[in-house]
Amino acid sequence: MTDTLTAFAQAKLATLEAQSLKRSLTPTHRLDGLWVERGGRRLLSFSCNDYLNLSHHPAVKAAAIAAVQAHGAGAGASRLVTGDHPIFSELEARLAALKGTEAACVFGSGYLANSGIIPTFVGEGDVVFVDELAHACIWSGAQLSQARIVRFRHNDMQDLAEKLAGLRGEGRALIATDGVFSMDGDIAPLDKISRLAQAHEAWLLVDDAHGLGVLGEGRGTAALFPDARIDLAMGTFSKALGGYGAYVCASAPVIDFIKTRTRTLVYTTGLPPANAAAALAALDVVAADPALAAAPLAKAQRFTRALGLPEATSSVVPVVLGEAERTLAAARALEAEGFLVVAIRPPTVPAGTARLRVAFTAGHPDEEIDRLSAAVRPLMAS
Image 1 (cartoon, helix red, strand yellow):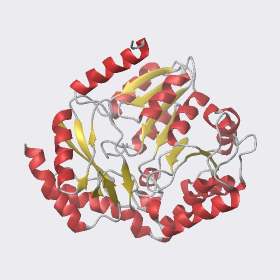
Image 2 (cartoon, rainbow, N blue to C red):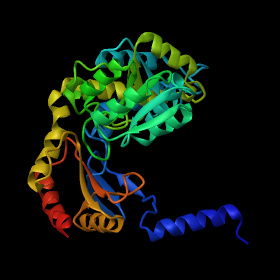
Image 3 (cartoon, helix red, strand yellow):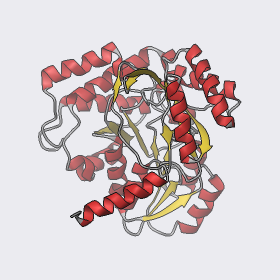
């Protein structure tokens, strides 16, 4: 007999399979910052967020190895118990200096950061304004907060202004957005959002996971908007810095409050010291080579020019094909040409907007970008 939980899962999976929306994990060996091995084939990956190829950089790997040898594989406990190695303070000071804030706090992951930070500052009786295309972890944090959630149209400042004006009598307010939107590659107008936030006495949280290390000479999306006030500047080490973990930068009292009350910091084991050491080494690499940070955007723009797409503004370029099955078929066709470009389907993106998400790194050869462009062109027309 099949138990009811298994029967429920089987029925849901069958429905997803019929809609070409079932997901499967595929064993993939990352050979370096560019190449992977999948199904016995060597493929050039355009699906990785390792924008500067630092996950395999000798200095970054050496720093992580040295930290493991010196401090062990794990943090041992919550940072507030016995897991707050001094390397975290060093990394936090470095991040605060990079972002121009008083202090910073390191988290285990970006999802832990956003799902913990938002409920720390807003709750029942408050309101969170969220860009409709914001990352899932922002939505999770908003839902966990029990505040009223107000969705505003993507990067639509008139819609945000109207909703702020209509709801600013509801206690504290937080506006939450990505800096670079991970599935569309476009950039939030942080200057305009900041002005609206200040006019309506709202706080602004920006998730810059896909901007750090790539935009603003490596300082991130906010560097493109020097007059914007960002109250909670969040980002990760798992994209351009090539490692794992996350952070939020803010004023010293805000960070102190996070460290004493944010549940996803207080009640979980700290980030392994090796991840912090790797992040510090990656920041050194970025600081020493400004041209490295500029390269992914230049590569993405080469691709968009070749295909007549809107000019890329980040490392991410979506090629929207519409239906899930068509997008899966396109990904299979590119794999046959030696490229890994994964199909992105609902619910990650809105229904009817399944796409190839093409992610560019500093190390992608121009001739391979041209070859990819030639392979994608007929898929856009079919």
